[in-house]
Length: 87
Image (cartoon, rainbow, N blue to C red; front, side, top):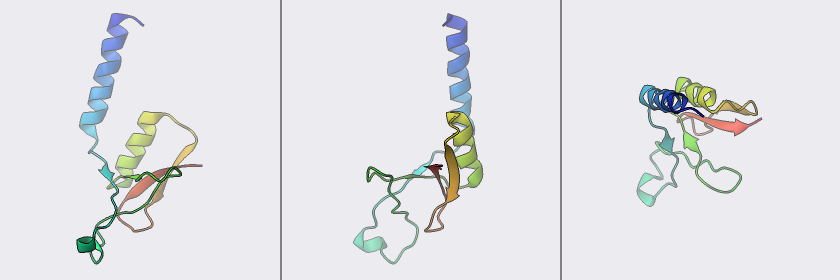
C-alpha cells in the first residue's frame, strides 16, 4: 500500500468515527437498576454483552463501515436501541 493510500484510509476511518455516535455497551442490571429499564442485557453467542446502537441510523452506519453481507440490524428486545446479528 502506498503511503498516500494509507493516509487516505486513515482519514476515511477518522471521518467515520467522527460522524457516528459512540455505541452503548449493554451491561448487566444491578440491584439498583432492576426496576429501571434503561439497560440491555443482550449477549452474543460467546456470552459477551452486545453493542447497543441508540438509533437505527447508527447501526446502519456501522453495518456500512464493516462491509459484511452476513450481518443484519434488528431492534433490541428490551426496546432500548438496535443490535447487529448474523443472518
